[in-house]
Amino acid sequence: MKLRLWVTVLLVSFIVLRLGMTIMPNISAYTEPYYTEGIYKDLERVFNESQYRKTKDPAIIPDQTVFSYAAGAYLHGVDPILVNSETTPLGKYAIALSILTLKNDKFVALPFGLATLVILFLLAKKVLGESVWALVPVAVVANETLFLNQLTTAPLLDIIQLPFIFLSLLLFLIEYPKRRFFGTAVALGLVMATKTHFPAFLLSGGFGIFLLLRNERLVFTRFIAALPISVGVLALSYVRTFLSGYTLIDFLGFQKWVILYQKSKLLYPFSAWRLIFLNQWQTWWGNMEVVPADDWQITWAIGTGLAFLFVFLLIRKKIKASPEVWVLVWWIMVYGAFLSLGVVSSRFLLPFLPIVYIVETYVIRSLLAKKL
Image (cartoon, rainbow, N blue to C red; front, side, top):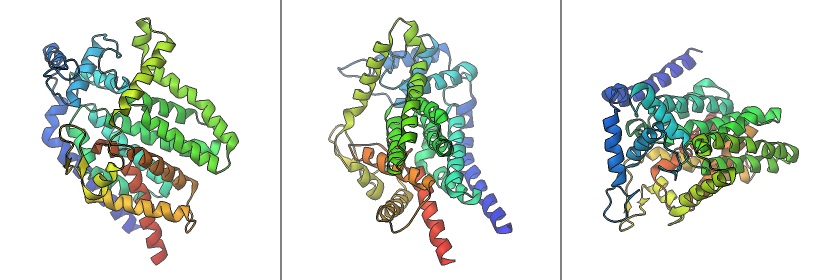
């Protein structure tokens, strides 16, 4: 009992320390009320001179600048289909709320970053069954430069969407024994509404495969029947668009355009695995060079390698796993197939690696239990 307590204290202290070392040196960036009307006008000018408005000699601006301007525009009543329409609007409305209440667009990264770690812990505990072991993947994620960069390079939509992805997995595990999926469907809708549709499509695919392979056809039907709730949540994020006079058919057309836009990087298939295992990142602009990623860590290769070995042994029926583990396994396989389709940046790995670390922890714990 004392050992468990000490390990818990050690892991929690490590998580708090890593977050503190990242946030505290730049605390004024999250708390200073600097987002004024003048700042918004400057962002609007920069945006209108960027690659999003000009085709000839544009200024290249980063994502956080785009999202900061879009959030300000939404506060000014601009329809979300008119500014940064290639991503869905809920994440930018969250940034807008931060601007409205604190006059700061960067603070939003902190509550969503904390929510990511809390939900990841709850998900790990649901799968592993013990709080001490559940803290292990959380500690690994809290030490990841990939995750910490989401707190410092703000505001980005990935960190806002990420807790909803993990919440979808958690709610599915909770609702599956009850054979109802209202909460799961709402969470999937939030995933779609925050940035892009694809993670929600992939989650639904993983859940569907899990149910069908367990011969739960009636439960599968109930899950499919709940999915219109997800579309309803997505539609709610476009209330401003409907108020502008657009119809449901128009709304569906906008979503088709967003999906087609996101398919534009289907180049260099399987290059994601070179990034994960060898730190060779395939770029998709300029000379299409292969360069190292600044946020790569050896944990990517170790965790993914162990997880894939575990999946292989599961498929060969050399070992057994609980339904909760199988749900995560199918997410790893489905999302891994998605990663294989084309070029990716490190941020694409945010929904993938934390789940890999839960499965890795499950493997390590099982091996230790056999030895002991």
